[in-house]
Amino acid sequence: ADSLRALAAGINLRIGTAVTPFELDNPAYAQITGDQFDSVTPGNEMKWETVERVQGVYDWSAADRLVTFAQQHGQLVRGHTLVWHNQLPGWLTSGVADGSIDNDELRALLRKHVIDEVTHFKGKIWQWDVANEFFANSWDAHPLPSGINGDNFWVSHLGEGILADVFRWAHEADPKALLVYNDYNIGGEDGTNAKADAVYAWAKSLLAQGVPIDVIGNQGHLDTQYGFSGPRLTAALSRYASLGVKVAITEADVRTFVDNATEQVPTSNLALFAQPYEYVQMLRSCLEVKECISFTVWGFGDANSWVPGWFTGEGYACIYDVNLNPKPAFTDLQHELMLA
Ligand code: G3I
Figure (cartoon, protein in one colour):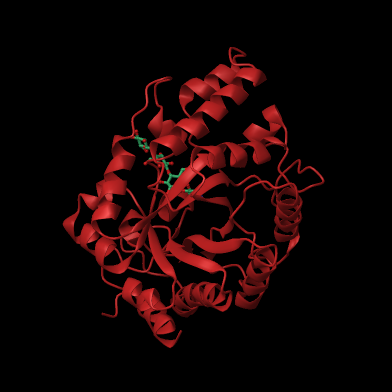
């Protein structure tokens, strides 16, 4: 009765997790996925490199398996992600690099990819992460004045206008799916609002042109070594919502430095407090903004997290430990939902 999904159901919020088929092969992991969450996001299975590894040959099997799991467990699916610079098929990036795919053809291939994928899953996807990570950070080399990253693969070849097109194409293919612009550090997580300001201004302008953007998704990959402010996140989310869109936390995790990559024990006592606290702050921001429709963690078991593979010496990012025991972050999220 006090599962995360049961607690959130009463307040009309979906609690989600990223999941991959190999995780569902572990019965204990599958059990928690079904018991605790009422939304799932495929971690890699809907990305272009997975669904069209060979040009012209679609393989939806891994993604279909996750969608079936979700349907069997009363979960909604967040589709992830249609247009990103990462995890593109090798045939596409090498074709662009060697000049055999020119920009006109690239645009046609992208349109076909978006329409075919959205059509395949039509009616089965609650929210689609249509465009992912297009905005520059302060540390990127060549941001355009708008804040869109001019070095982005898609923008550098097809121009900024491609963003409006991909939302229109996705809407055409499944008019009922909620279409998401998804990015990280757009809730002031780095201590400045520069990226949040840029996304806000961009969304405002596209919405004024009638571009079908329904949700702004803030990923929420936090690190306890940086200052994170819950009130600043709340302010950012409510400012997006003031444009008439919904908002969501789409990929929450909170990493910290650990002594040992296998056991993932934090090196600092402070992190033991900061880690659950920052999870709660993110959830609280979502609860405080009534347009926030889902709170999704980017996987829930430390043993499977993407973090140790990407950030040397860091880990402990999830709400369950390496043995799938709930951590303080889990119980603190539970309490926060009980109070909501
Ligand atoms: O598929 C290959 C496999 O053939 C090979 O044997 C294996 C060896 O390392 O690698 C496999 O690819 C891995 C892929 O995940 C699929 O498992 C890549 O190495 C690995 O880098 C890739 O990582 C994913 C990452 O995105 C890459 O961009 C993570 O699992 C995934 O959780 C992560 O998710 C992203 C979101 O999509 C967008 N926001 C940030 C988030 C975290 O990076």
